[in-house]
Amino acid sequence: MIASYRVVRLAFLAALAAILAGCASSPAPQRVEPAMPRYTSPITPQQVVGKWGLAAYHRPEDAARTEAQARQGCRQPYVINAGPSGGFMMYLADDSQPSEVVSKQVGTGPIYIGLPNEPPGAQSDREVVRFDGQVLVLKWLDPEVAGRYGTMVYVRCP
Image 1 (cartoon, one colour):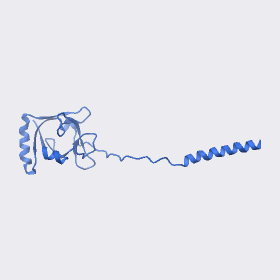
Image 2 (cartoon, rainbow, N blue to C red):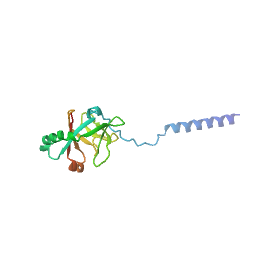
Image 3 (cartoon, rainbow, N blue to C red):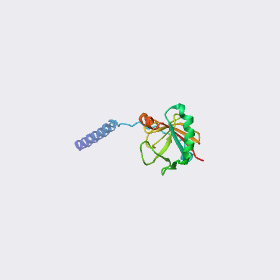
Image 4 (cartoon, rainbow, N blue to C red):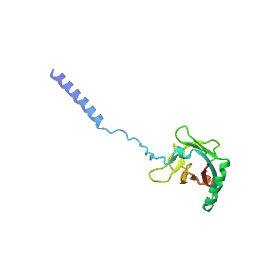
């Protein structure tokens, strides 16, 4: 009886040691993806949905003249519609169909307009140079696209 008591006791101690050893081992390190910064959307779809005259310039000294040309563009306006997921519909570079975009800003940094699933300042984004509700000036971030399309000036049509 004493021998069986010792066997049970030793088995219990061995099991307890195994359990404690399992608890003491650290789990394999897991790779943690850096969190994307949360951005706000300072320009709402309601502020940009509508008809706009559109023109573009490549040299900053042409900005005022280009704004006047954009006003004349209201004869054949560029239409920005509301998007199905809360953004607004605009054409991306070289796309024949509009895509849903949003305005994006991290903290007090620059405001961008681009695809909602990309971080602010992505290569396909446009930086908001100016927006006052009546005039929207956007600069492409991709230098190659900016070289072809220039800085876009949108003027709200009456």
